[in-house]
Length: 133
Image (cartoon, rainbow, N blue to C red):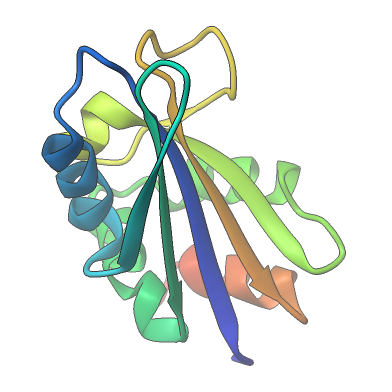
């Protein structure tokens, strides 16, 4: 698989702990470079990582929770020419699980927005959701 980069955006609401939001991201994607930008209300957590290892933990969770087929459907919906875009439920991620969500109205605290960039995003989806790891 070619070089991939993972870009994540998560709103940190004034009622949330920034540390817990960071932990939610790390429980799904592992250690990433993170920074928080202040917003009018709360902040915006930005996280980035490169390489296949940036997706290894996410890949393992999809395998462990037996949700590869469902994940594949969601990831293919978010497929673009050089990226795959999807959202995850922030509260479920904090518990160390994956639950895909819509960008608006589904999660009261807002989603974790994920963009995986690659020259061949279809290959990334195939790898993430392969039935035989």
